[in-house]
Length: 344
Image 1 (tube, rainbow, N blue to C red):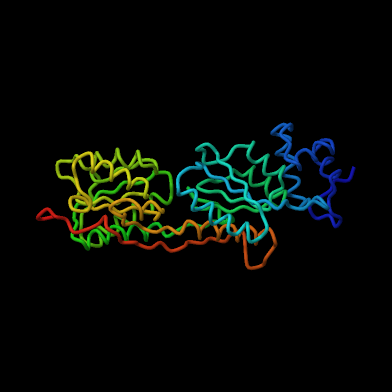
Image 2 (image 1 turned 120 degrees about the vertical axis):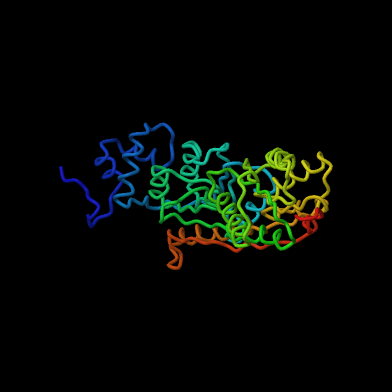
C-alpha cells in the first residue's frame, strides 16, 4: 500500500488522512468538525497528519465569527478590550463570540471544540496562551490566533499585542519622585504575569536612576482586583515608616488603596499620593480623580483583531511572528501631589 506523503503532488484527501492515521473517514470528519467523541490520542494523531499534509477541506469556509476568550471576564478592563475587538469585527461584518476560561491561563478542550465546530475566522486570547496540541488543531483548520497582553513568554511564531509596561512603570514612579516623594510603595499584580513584572522593573529603574534605594519592604503583590489593593494598601500604610505615595499595578488596585487610606484616616493626595495603571473610566469619576498610566486597551484589542483577520485573509504584510507594543502614557490628575511631611 503506497503511503501519502507531504511531498505528494496531489492534495491529500480525507480518505488519505484516514488511511495514514489508521482510522475511519468518519473519525477524521469528527475531528475536522470539532466533535468531542474522539479519543485524545486519536485526535492528536489525526491533527498532526492534517497539519503535516496541509489538508484543507474543500468548500468549507470560515464562519463570520471572531472568538475572544478571557481568562477572567469581569470588570471595566474587559469591557475596554471587548470594545476594541467589536469595532474591528463590526467593520468586517463579523460577530464577536465571548468566552472565559474560569481563571485558567490555558483554555480547556471544550472551549477549543466549540471554536472548531463554529469554524471561526480567528481567535483572540487575552492574558492566555495555547498548548502545542491546541495550536496544531487551530492550524489544521486555518484558524489564526493572536494573544493580547501576553501572560508569559510566547513561542517566536505567535502573534501578540501588548503595551510598554516597563515604560509605564518608569513614568509613574518618576512622576512621584519629581513631586518630592522618596518612600514610594508599589503593589504588583500576579508575579507570573509579564506585564506585572515589567511595571515593577520600571518602578525599580526610576528609583535607581534617581539615586534612591529599592526597599523590598515597600513592595506588595496580589491579584489585579480592588480587594488586593485594599489589603496590600493597609499593609503598606501601617508600616512604622509608611510610604507617602503608592504606585498600584492597575486602577482597581489603586481604588483599593483609596479604601485603605480612608479606613486609616489618610487624605488623598494631602497625606498619600496614588498612581494607577490602565486609565479605566472609573479613574476619571473617582474622587479625587486618579493619576494613572493609560494603557491603550481598546487599541490593543483592535490591533490584535486586525492581525488575526489579516492572517486569515493571507495578507503578505501580516506574519505569524508579528509582535506589537503600543505606547503607554502618564495621565496626571488630582490623586498626586508633593508630600506634606517634612523630609519626605
